[in-house]
Amino acid sequence: MPKGHTDLCPVATLEASLAVAAITEGPLFRRIWRLPPPRVPRGTRRKPVADRYRIGTSPIDADSIALIVKNWTGLAGFDAAGFAGHSLRRGAISSGVAQGVHIARLKQFSGHASLKSLEEYVELDEFRHNHPLKDIL
Image (cartoon, rainbow, N blue to C red; front, side, top):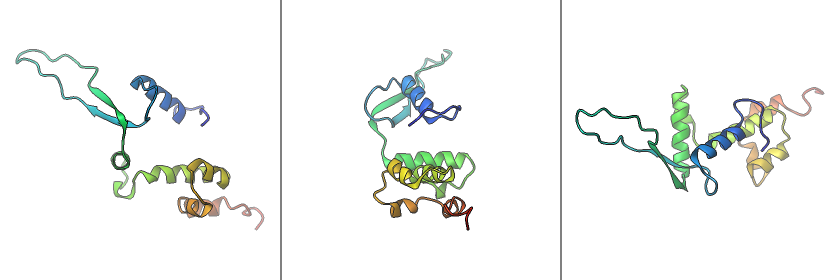
C-alpha cells in the first residue's frame, strides 16, 4: 500500500503504532488491555504510571473487531447497530469505487472470489455515479 501525503495516511499510522508497541513480527492487531492502578499505602500520593497498558501476542478475533467498530461508530454519533467489522471492508471498497478505482483492482485488493460477490459490498449509488457511460448516455 502506498504511503499517503496527509495526517490520515494509514501506512504512517500503522508504522507509528508498530514502533510504539515494539511489534516487529506476528499479528498486527492484538489484544490490548489496561492494567489496574498500582496499590499505594493510605496517605501516599499516587505517582503517574506511564506503562498502564499491555499488548498481547495473540491476534484479536472477529468479534473483538466488531465490538471496536461498534464502539467507535457509536462514539462518533452513528447508530452502532448498523456497523460491524465488515463495515471497514465495505467502506474501503465503496470509497475506491467513488474515487474511480477500476473494479478489477478492487477485487484484487479485497480478495473477493468473484466480481458478483464484490458488487454486494459496493453502494449502488456509487455504481450509478461512476457508470462508465454516464457522459455518453
